[in-house]
Length: 390
Image (cartoon, rainbow, N blue to C red; front, side):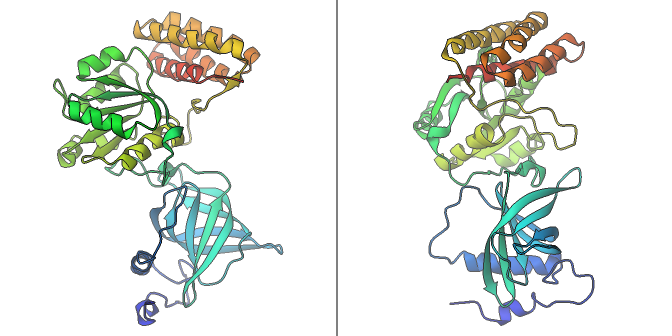
């Protein structure tokens, strides 16, 4: 049965002056209205299957510049309901034509608002004058700029994950044989190569090769998972890490949630949750360090690059050579390999590699910048291993 008119009358009162949005709702009134909408939508018979997960983004004022199909711009302040990697849901007191282009000014956690271009894909009448506007972004956004990372909140951009799309090398640090078998079962349909270590000491010895993601139990025989992460960062390994725990309260006391490169998963673990957490690192975040200011570093390459088959094996060998030099801490020798790749990659059809190789070589040659150089060299080795025959 549809909600009664009285349930929506109070929140939908429109005041005359200095309205924060076209509905005339302040933050408190907006929260009440959205709670009612969530309850109403929760009674829907069939959930909608979406590519991107929606996350609450309850903002009373979101500036939007609308370009109508007939021409002309309209500047509005709209209330916001939720946000996803691919779009935003806004509330308006009138119908909006699908197909209209829009520029949405999204407030970031750092650095002020950011203008995001998009197109209105739907306008749904909810109740009385209330309409929900769905805007699809022209390019996916990085949710970490708006929702944040850390603070104990683990969010995922993808609502559903195709296991077959998960490829790469995963290091799993876990002393429990049962948990290891569960992990193998959950990842059976992926293309991930899983390597196991039972202690931190064993895991550190195995870090002479490159991993795309590391998963670690929090309570290990020789130290905690957070102490393991600290050891990794000391030797310039910035691989994304997921820590699994059955005691999230105790883990949160360590402050680990403030590191955006660390994800937290709570037992009992589900397969879908695990796949979404891994996909966030491999498919969405692409292995980048999180930088929320304007001085962002260039994006490491994680997608496969296709080059002539004759060159693929040679770059794979160079990746192995970089692993060898990095494990020995030989910055000079590692820089020489990077210089070799910088000179050869463009001629082989992979100019993207030359950019990382140049950055790595420069950092490895500067006193005090070696840790960054080793990190970039690891990114470079990963990119070399992803090369595929054209």
